[in-house]
Length: 120
Image (tube, rainbow, N blue to C red):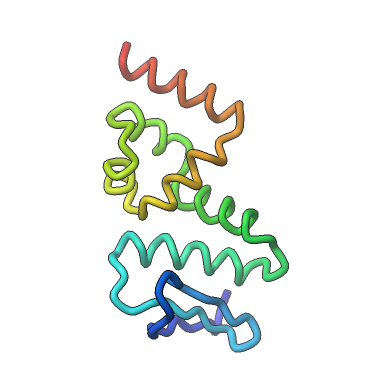
């Protein structure tokens, strides 16, 4: 992706970002924390890569890019608290929630194996 720009602006409450593929511009809410910027930018980049994707698909693409399974498993061995997980993984809490809610059965099994190995 080349010739794209990121612009910081003011959005209505609750809106953190937006992507304009035609203008090749990603807009981010001013004043976001680093974790929020990282999470929102990954989400908006997923829109830029595949503008026709449904929101759920964009969410899953972004969280899987930000939180690889091994890092998630390592963090879960340390804490089950979503706020602590977010701090450890450098993302915001909604991103942690989406990642945990979107785990496949195979991923859940892999996490259980990794956590057991770290505990054992």
